[in-house]
Image (cartoon, rainbow, N blue to C red; front, side):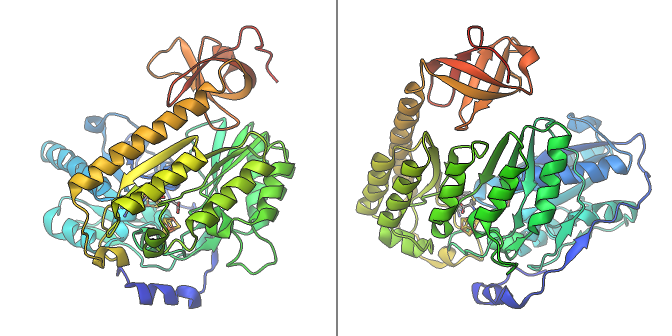
Length: 472
Ligand code: SAH
Ligand code: SF4
Ligand code: F3S
């Protein structure tokens, strides 16, 4: 297990990817035992956790949401920023404490942090009470690792190579919306990002396998699928089978499932044919998450993003022109090494031009092993924090503005469930991915309803169904 250097990792084009079937022949040896699973990071990890849950449940475990009740703790970790890392080690402290009182407790760590060599070293030396470490490429080996558990710490992590598994079963969190992996890994190597190292090279699933999965989900009553990949626009290119993301989107739309979403889009591979397909099908939702990262050409170059400010804005406008009513959200990093006030103002300029529906904003966090971590960071933490504050103020003002524009209009909302904080209310998402809270109407859960928007906040909308509540 190695975290490769950039040059070595880029040679991965020679690695042969094989399609494999997951083996579900193992005994239910843990009947009566409980597992506690904690997930950090992105949607990909959330979906991987649905796979992990299925293995655990087939082994006989049942889930508990109370750590102290568990016989097995699984932490599915994220490595994207330093704070993700700190959160996991903080939580591990709690698990260690619990294991002192309950020595038979099993602790397993998986996810992106397990793919980092320095983290594995740290677990080996400082956290010997951790029983199992598994990586992102061998989730399906978790049953074997648990069944063959040894007295000493078991570390089973593969390096960058990853195969594509088919026939994976999931214990899905929702009966209404489902994640569908369309590809794994990332070949973009943005200079700040750990993902290409923790998730391996870009590997697409075959189009027909994805379509069959969506058809099955539809038959099982699912209303929405979200196609998942680190940059979905690159889908299919590694397969060389003559199809790409636009073809996949079209085939998925033609299954007739009510809502199709996808994350994440990368501006670099976004073709005008893809925009045309999104515009053509009513069941492909008018919502695109299009990370900008920075508005400065100099910083974009340092980040290895392979587009300029102008190219981003021009793509943004062609999406807005062709897809009526589309909402576009973004990710932005502030305080990248060498980012000057002028560079930062370029970022604010893009925000002022694009007026994003919302944005996830981050302070740059150096990740060991990435090229950017070698650049001397000459931006003070105070400056980074102040830029983040200034950016957030602007971003939030535009989010509120976008939401306010919806007040008085009637929009389609897929109702997902009861509001956790206020059980009298239900919540759902508009076609444009805006969160709407509604009083009452619990019988509407799982349905797409026309909702009148009556109030807007920066991060959510309030709606009512009484006058227009006809379910479709
Ligand atoms: N594949 C997606 C998202 C990957 S991670 C994409 O390319 O857009 C989600 C977001 O985390 C990124 O868009 C980026 O804004 C942020 N991020 C990634 N690495 C980071 C780092 N080292 N420091 C701060 N933010 C980072
Ligand atoms: Fe990371 Fe860039 Fe790949 Fe996104 S596209 S996962 S930011 S390397
Ligand atoms: Fe984190 Fe891995 Fe996702 S690093 S953001 S969980 S791909």
